[in-house]
Length: 248
Image (cartoon, rainbow, N blue to C red; front, side, top):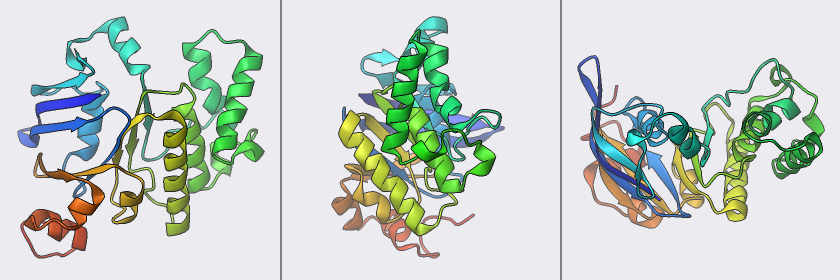
């Protein structure tokens, strides 16, 4: 479903991606792990076409997303759902209005159908009791659940999760992981999850890729990554401060 070939990107002379190549199979969920500030979120933004590389390709199916413009690019993006780190909810809209927003903007569905779809997705994340609340009235975990419902409201083929449990306590983080797992079972989307939740993220993904210094160091199943002898993988998984990965 997603094929990344030789992706390079630099900012002000600093090379963040140095030839990233990675493949995500249709229907699988891949965890992208690595040190903060080493390009994981930048990679996600390339996958959805929010950034353009200095060199390289991102193929969605057989289409190079960087060759698309205008309406063709917009049509491609309708295949995606994106869960941002902070949720990115609209402060002036209620929970219901936030989740309904993509349907109202991108479809011609009648209001009764929109209401049914929104309430269904909110039920999946246990947020039907907060339909009339505003984001300022929600906890961090509640905001993430609403943002997840909004990301899934169009039933996307591809889901990108940018650190979905950042800032959450361990119990709430586990809840978000469980919700993502359940939603994947229901919708069978292809997913990439950027995460630092080691080893908990391993429980809900099919494969894991470690990004370090702008390249993919190793890719494997959670069991393979946990049993890896690669020095960078061993250091990251163990959280050791000494090793080939430079702490910033």
